Image (cartoon, rainbow, N blue to C red; front, top):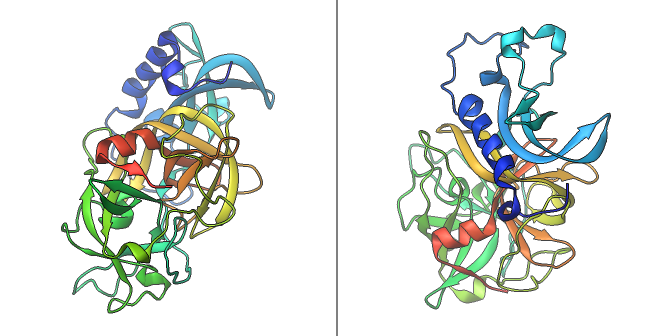
Length: 335
């Protein structure tokens, strides 16, 4: 299968993927009694994502395009009843099953105070009383602009507490979990967020906060990423090598494995579906971990930004297409 962006996916492959999404991923979840260490064999419970890519056969990537089922656990077929076995084909398109585990929005590990603050460092919101003892931090993704003003770009769940914070709420660097001080470390105010929807598919998890003083921030991403090559994002393609800096795992590299995945993620407000997402595998260990949400994902060959990290697990990371994020918020990257 040749490397292609999401806009180049053949219609037959896209349609087969959408059928799988509608039939399995978007189907109502059955209410089950939770049993420790138990795994459900029902596809509605085990499938956490559907995407497209090249089929793997005996551990090797082939040139055959397929619909991928991302599952909590890849089970021996002898354990699964015939009616629960995932289809081998959909509309004459082959399928593949990839074990990923569950996906979660990624939360924090400590990082330091920086002035000027840069993409890749710790930041976050503070909760009012009586919840002011709950501390968090995420990642400053990028510096963006609109109408002459400058804003910090990150996730809704990093800047807006999953829709729950009011516009104008202060944003701190470092995040309060990283010893940020409410009295002295405010650098921005929540300006806009795209609401997260529990009932319908989401495409982005993003928000912006206007910088209170331009001298407090700079656009250059922390080492080793450095300055972006331009203010326009590049389309992710399967096989693209990417890098990021996040406050949880620092600098890491990875490879794009899917550019049009529909994924189920666990948030505080519930289990959310995200459509048309980028999936990334780390090249030497994890690509992202706790505290990395909000990190910008950069194509290594070109130095152009391509995604906004929203979550993942120890096997795969999930990112929004950055072009979708910038369009939704009506902003442009600052480089």
